[in-house]
Structure formats: C-alpha cells, structure tokens
Image (cartoon, rainbow, N blue to C red; front, side):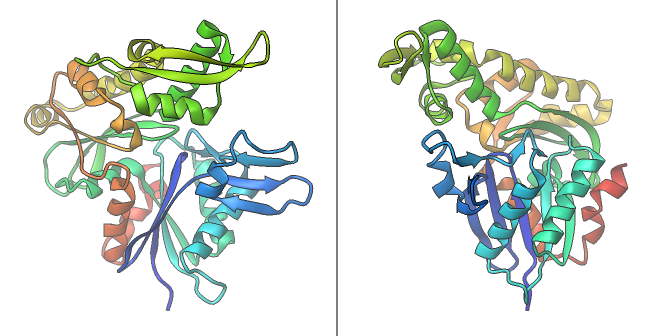
Length: 336
C-alpha cells in the first residue's frame, strides 16, 4: 500500500516525512552529474561533498535556486531519487504534498507539480512554506488570533501573518542563507584578495557569523587561493567583519518582516505585541537574527524548536489527516 509523503523541497535541504513514520529523509538539495554520460553519480550529502572538488565533466549542482526550479530535468531526476530513497517504486505511487515558497509564480508551481508526477507521485499538492511552518511550530492557526511566522530558507525569506487558517498578510523576498554565503565570498575576495568556495563561506557563517553585536567577538582563520599569485594563503576574519559583510542581505530579510507588519490589520497587529513573531528555517539559526528582527520590529521574536524541520513537520501533520485538510493543499487555486 502506498504511503502519503510530505516533501520540503528546499533550496538548501530536502526533507521527506512519511505518514505514520515521521521524517525518513533529510539531505542537501544537491545532485552530482556526469555531463558526458548524463549519469547521476550522487545525491544529497554525498553530492554536497563534491561541490567545488570535481573535474570539469562532473558537476555538483543545486537544481533549485531562490526557491524556484532552475533546471526542470535535473529537479525531476532528484525528486525521483528522493522518492526512491523514501521507498517509492513503480508499484507504489504515493500522494505527495510538496512545500513550496509563496513567492513562486503559477508557472513555477506547475513545474513543481509536473516534476513530482513524472518522478512517480500519484497526486502532487502544494502547501506554502509559511503555513506549513506555522503548523509545525504548533501555532493556533485555526483561531481568530494573529500568528506571524518568518521562514528564512536557503533562497527565500517569507513572512506571513496567519489567522483563521488563512494568510492575512504576506511578504516574500528572494533573499536567503545562500546570499549570506555569497556576501562572505565577495567580501573576502574584495578585501583580502583571496577566493574561497561556497562550503568555506558557509563554515565561516556558522562559526563566526552574526546579525547583531554580541558580548563575545571571535576570529577565524580562512584558507583560500590568493588572486594575485594563485597560491594558497591564510587570513584571519573577525566576527565584526563577517557581520558587516552580510549586513545587506540581513537588512533585506528584516525589512521584509517590518513591511509585512506594516500591512497587518490593527487588531492582529495588537495580537503580535502579546504573541510575538516565530522564526523557522535554517537562516533563523544565525546568531543574533532573532535580536535583530526584534530590534527593528519592536516585538518579541523567538526561534521555534526544530526550526530546520518545522516546515516538513507541519506538512506531515497535514498528511496524517490528509482527507480532512485536502482543501489546504489547493494553494494555487485558493490564493490565485
């Protein structure tokens, strides 16, 4: 018998929740291909390790950028492999709920649905990530109460004000954690004259990155290729430098939250003073992000438990009662 599956098809990571089992897969959204033969060499964590370390005929790519499919064929192959790892076969075609950014267009929505169907899903429904994140955070979205969720993913930042099971106000920008990594790469190249890779930039962000000044400031050694000589070189970065380097994308994220607050009805805005704002997504783990948003929004901001899994857990709660909440999955039809 087929299993209902919930998939958080993120720019950075792909998570799969199986009905009655919980999360059965959590892998980076990366696929490694041999461009000569078209063969898929690796997917997920194994492919992630290959980024920046492969010969010219092997590429390790992220088929989703800024929450949108940039390569339909590669995305379809990745979804097929993800479903296979989750136990799906040609004789076992599940109903699938896919969490997508609210910022994607109708054309991009159709692309996601079609990729899932061609990859082996019997049915493919879409659920917006802020709504799934609110459910996963345990917020009372069915009540006439203002619940605000900020989902900071790899490619998008989405802020949604939810009440009575619907989105009252929404602000989405195509800026996410990967933009922080790119800003660090550009800063190190421009200021110190060395080139570092995507993985190194991410490691710097995790180690000493912050969105708000802290009592303790750190430094980290960064190894890269000198742009003048071409030789390996080591420089030391401080947490203050990194905070300044990522200030532009962080400001864009925070501004989107403030903009969403500005479009909230007065009664629901009043609720937020008491209930605060909830952060989900991997970007919320950046040190000081909650404090930065709280300073700008003038309300309490909290990072929910399991922020990386909140979206897929919310979608998982929906598929546990699939038939009862089926209308929630008709995202494109209800909002457009």
